[in-house]
Amino acid sequence: MLIVGERINSSRKRIRKAIKARDAAFIRKEAVKQLGAGATHIDVNAGTSISTEVDDLKWLVQTVQAAVDAPLCIDSPSAEAQAEALKLHRGQPIINSITAEEDRAQSILPLVREHDALVVALTMGTGGIPASKDDRMQAAAKIAEMVQDAGIELTNVYWDPAVSAVSTDQKAALDVAATVRELMATYEGTHTICGLSNISFGLPNRNILNRTYLALLMAQGLDGVIMDPTEKHMMSTLLATQVLLGKDDFCMKYITAEREERLAACENHKPIAAS
Image 1 (cartoon, rainbow, N blue to C red):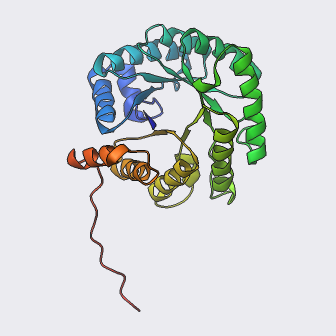
Image 2 (tube, rainbow, N blue to C red):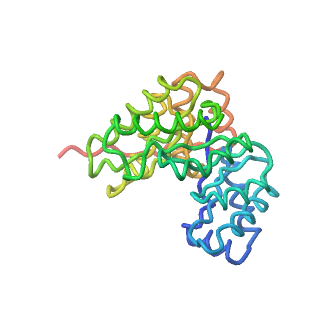
Image 3 (cartoon, rainbow, N blue to C red):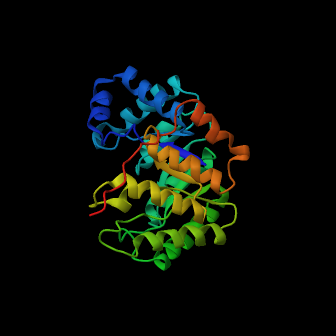
C-alpha cells in the first residue's frame, strides 16, 4: 500500500509559516514524524503563494530529503514548479497531478517520462468533479491515451477517482467505489489512489466516515492513499484492512505496529442504557 503523508502542505497555517520563515527544523520534524507513522512517501506542496512557489517547492524538496530517506510526492499543477523541484529529487518521485485537460497533461507528461515518475491522474476534465462513474471512466480513457502516446507505461499511473461529498450526493461514495473497481479491472498493472476527506465534507465526526470509506475502497482494489499517517485511528483501519484482505503476510505489519504502539488504543465504552 502506497501511503502519501499529506501534512507538509502550505494550506496548513503552521506549514505556510514555516516555509516563509525557512524553518527547516519544523519541516524536518513533520517529515520524520510521518515516515515513522507509516508513510511510504512524503507530499510537499507550496501552492498557496504562486509568486514564490518554485523557490518554496525546491526548498521543501531539499529540506525533507535531507531529513528522511523516502521519495516525495511533488504536489503542484505548475509544470515549471514541478520541473525545478524534480531536478533536486532523489529516487522515484510521484507527480501530483494530471487530468484529462490536454494542455495540463501535455505540460506534465514529459516530466513524468524524463524522471520515470509515478503520476497521479485525476479522472476529471475541465468541468470539475465528475457526476458519475461513466464520466470518470471517460476521463480515464482520454488520460490513458495521452500517457501511452507520450511513451509512458500505464503501470506508472495512480488513478485518482475524484472523491466527492456524500452529503450532497448520496451516490457519490458508491460511484467512486465502482470507479476504483473498474479502473483496476480495465487498466491492468495500474494503481488507484485518493484523498479521502471530501467524502465526509459537511458531516459531523468526519474521521469515522473517512476511515470507514478507506476500508471500503481498499476492498475494491485501492492500493494508494493520501492521508495523515499520524492519525492513529486512520492508520489502524488501514493496517487492519490489509490483514483482512490478505495483503499483510503473516499479519506482520499489523503486529509490528502494535509493538511500536502505533495502533489506536481501544476505548472501553459503557452500553447505552435502556430507556
